[in-house]
Length: 403
RNA sequence: CGGGCUGUAGCGCAGUUGGUAGCGCGCGUCGUUCGGGACGACGAGGUCGUGGGUUCGAGCCCCGCCAGCCCGACCA
Image 1 (cartoon, helix red, strand yellow):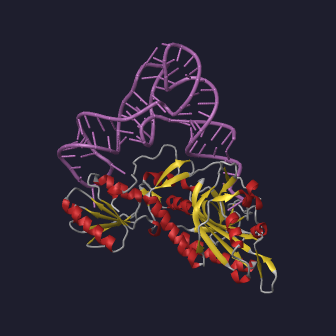
Image 2 (cartoon, chains in turn green, red):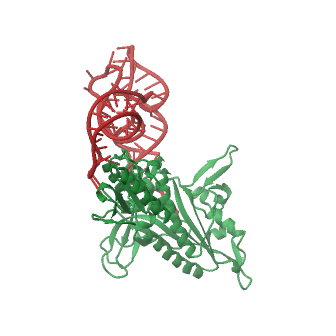
Image 3 (cartoon, protein in one colour):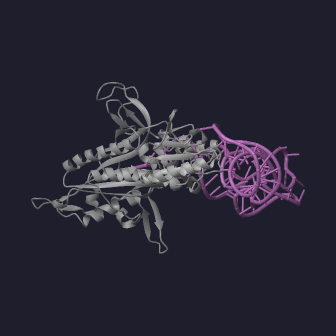
């Protein structure tokens, strides 16, 4: 991609009122544009990152047997009444048609996938199953805030698993935990698995994947031994002895990037999702649900991986692998750059080439830091036919003959 | 939804006692520059969030509304 043709310009100045690093940097670097509170448009750079994350999530979901589907965002009121959440879920967006029919905009998809599962699951032979989607969710938050971290419309991966028994769910739940840990690791994040309440619709357990950062809006109490609890259910406070190992627990500000729930038979009961077991008995299907906020994850990565100059993308989620920057105004520099650009592209490497002859060197270098592509390749009169390679965030660079 | 702050050019902002709107960045043309957001010259760009009111006259004063941000509540 030639930067001269890229949709999205960088900005030297921050937007006036917003204070979160993820909003500031993603908007300034041309990844995203805010339409209104809690709602963003994604420009090519931002959309590439979201797709990087999505593809990685697809890999890990596939690895635990998840099959990708795509469900509607517009839901019938009736399904939400059946589960009681038409009235109980405050964040549910409700819309009215011309004929006064009412609908919900999906904040989550149990109300859609469980009735769908009912058409396909009737025997123990149909279990277990795991289906997921990556889709836009809508939640009527009273207050959207912190850039991508709490939006009213956002991108989310939601996986639902269906089991013949609580034990089978339990073992899948542990597999999902492992897959989630891998996803966040690949995103350059150390996610802490914190115990949390099961919420209003299950008496069972849930776990949250929490990333520690100053800008986080959640609070957990955690210990190096692996113990961690969400503030809402924690029986310990900062400094108290860890119930597992006895060392004092720490209080951490965190961003919740994923959560996993044991839903038990709640939704199966609501919609009559049953199966016949080996002995011919009819039983309710046990369901688990597993979410990752894809767009929030992008925000969380920026919160954790940035410096005073801009974003520092972890390799696997970066919009491009290389940022080729041509300095000066010599024809030879641009001729060499074009060759390098063509070669890298031919090799299947993703490269953003700053081919803007009218931009100053200083501006190009500042832009490269702001955008935060992991490897910067500079070609200038000083590099004399070679290429200067530098990792974003590193101090030293090295001259190489080819990449 | 309660409290606070803010809405003036694409972005960031200034605008005095009410007298008919300006600066920086960005943008366009030309020239000079080129390793950390260069310089000069010329130029384009405005229903001052919106509706009402007060006044000879409102960006400025008064009332309503809308929007954004921050704190809180909310966030199965």
